[in-house]
Image 1 (spheres, rainbow, N blue to C red):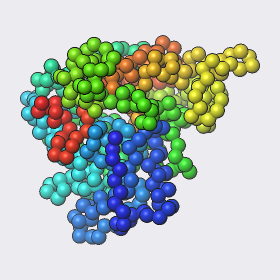
Image 2 (cartoon, one colour; image 1 turned 45 degrees about the horizontal axis):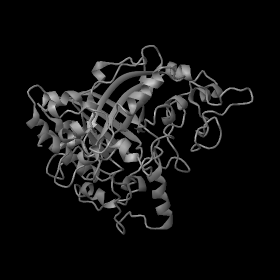
Image 3 (cartoon, rainbow, N blue to C red; image 1 turned 180 degrees about the vertical axis):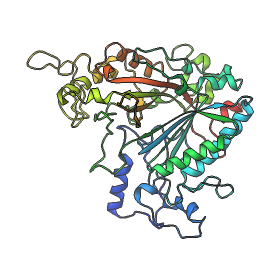
Length: 446
C-alpha cells in the first residue's frame, strides 16, 4: 500500500482541525474498502515554481495530496479512486527485446517517481511540457503491468505466469482485438485532469522508439470532496458501485489481491500451474507483492437502461438506487439476506439480480478489488451514447477472482442485456520497488 506523507508547517499546509477533517474527507472518498490514504505534501509544487523563479503558492487540499511511488505494492491498486484516469497499452517496436524493455521500464519508473512527487518530468534536466505547471501532485499514481505477449517479445516465456493465460470467451463479449491486450500496460490516475494528462504525455514521450501505443482509454470519477461526506462512487447508470469490495482490514485481503512470495506460496492451497503454486513460485518470484489487473471496456446501453423504472432498475441490480442498500433491507453496508422473501413469497433480491450472482457467497468466496473509471467517448453512429465503465479489477489470480464470477454472470445476470464487453486485457503487475530500483527489474534482470 502507498505510504502516507505529510510535510507539516510548510506554506499551504493545513494544520488546524478543519483542515485535518478536510483531508480525511478527500482521502477516503472513492471505492469502498480502498486504502493507502494520501495526505498533504505541499512542498511537491516547488519543482514547478522553480522553473519560473516564483515562490511556491499555497496548494489546495486536493492539489497537495501525494501518493508514494516506492513501497511493497505499486500505487494505484489500493489508492482511493481518483477523479481522472488514463489506461494505455503499448506494444514493443519491431526489434526491441529484453534490453530495450529494461531501459524503457527504467525511464518510465524514473519519470513516474518525479511526477508523483509533483516535480517536472526530467527534474530540470530535460524538456517538460509545462501542462501541470501550477499544480501539485494531486494524488497522481502511475502503475505498470506486463501482458502475455511481452514475455514472447523479450525471450522470457519461461518466466510467464499461468495467470496470463487467455481468458475464456463470454457471451457478452463483442471484443475489438485492436483495443485489447498489449505487451505493456500503464494505468494513470490523478485528482486533476491536467496532472493526469501531463503524466500521460510524459509516459508516451519516454516510450520513444521502443514501444508504440496500441490503445488508449480515458476515464473519470467523481472529484474527491464533491459530496457532503465520503461516499462510494456511482457509475453512469446511477448505481452505487463498489460496496462489496474486499477491505484491507479483512484478514484475507492480501491473500485475495496480491501474489504471495515463494515462501508463502509453498504453504498455500494454490492450484497447480497458477502464479502462486509451489511448482512455479520460484520462476515467478518477480511477481511477489504484485497483482493481476483484468481490464474490460464495458459499454452501457444507457438509452435502454434509462427506459426502466427505478423499481425495475433496482431489481436488476438487487440494491436500492438512492443509497445502495440491499433490497433485503438495511443500509449500504448491511449484508445481503439472499433468502429473505416478501409478502408475496418472492425473493426480495431476485434470483438473477446482479448483486446476488456476483456475491462471494454465490461464487465460492471468489473476490476481486474493483477500481474502475467511467468513460464517455461521444455519440456512436447509431445515435446512442458511447459510454460505460473502464472496468479494472485486481486479484492474486484472475482464474480464482474474475473468471468464476464472470462465468456465473454469463449464465443469467439480469444486467447483461444492458451492457456489452467491447475490449479486454489481462496484465501481470509486479510488486512495488525500493529506492534505486525500477518496476519489473526482478523480471528483466533476474
